[in-house]
Image (cartoon, rainbow, N blue to C red; front, side, top):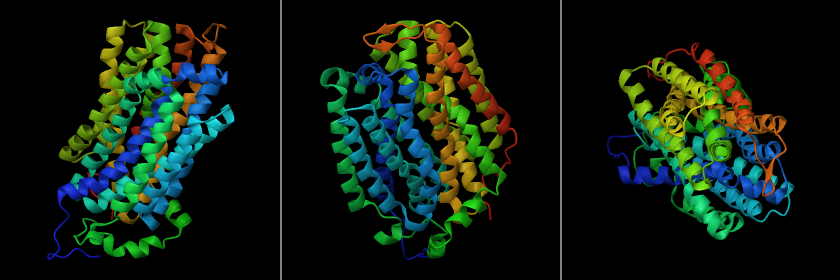
Length: 431
């Protein structure tokens, strides 16, 4: 599998197509991640639950997603992304169908659990495909584009999903989502290949000739080796606050917050949370490219975390007019795209043979943020609930929302302190 001059590298159209099928599963995963935000009222009324139980229902996605990250990274190093992506899409289709037809909260939780576990393979598999199908200088761009694809799914789960739900009901829409995911499963098995060599092209992975050896690296040994690097711990924990804030706000609580505090209709509230996601999507590839040009990772990561902390502090603790809230959300979302800088830094902090494992470990951070903050905010809301119900769903006053979001603030403060201890990689791969 060593690249030779007689073999051309794969054409860009083919490389992006192979990578794009993996990205489509990530798009679907992100869509499922934030979909509960625009159907909170339907879910609370239909299953007769409060904010804490709703946060837990949404959180079941994150519970299994986070649990799958380490085995996904290790399996991606051993088995390759094609089989992972195909299996992931198939199970995601099953989980979505289960959620769509759930007759009780238990079955809805089970469906969300299956969805989270299955789409968890998408991001790390995309990183593996990028390391083989793209030149090293394009890696940060591909990682940023991955976030962009994911956020496209998040935007689809905003206003468009709300309009479809109002027209056809949430169960019907989720049923169609299951069918689309099943089609992706078939397309992935048919078209995706782990390495360009399987299509007769040269591989961009300098590690390709050692691939067989990497496949037989003991799982536990590889994991323990990755965890010996200080940067991996920092890049695992820092996104819990920064990205967790995005997932908690846009993924579940932003829409009901804007409806109950600012009196917005569901579609307008979803549009505003989509602004945060779009800014986040733009920030990922641009911040990744800027760090590549500067040849350094840490200064940009620290600066953007400062911006995130300042923005959320203002949003949570000051009584802002709606226009100013929206104005602040955009740069906060953009700066939160710094997790792409973190993924590139994580890849450079370990030997290339451990990239999949390191990526899986570090990808736990953002999802840990959603897993912890979504139910925690709901728990805090229920503690401050005044007893008001509207159409069978609980509503909360501004003081309750501030108390809930203060947990987001605390998480970002911890992130700010941690990132100061990051070791600079100077955009160079560890030996």
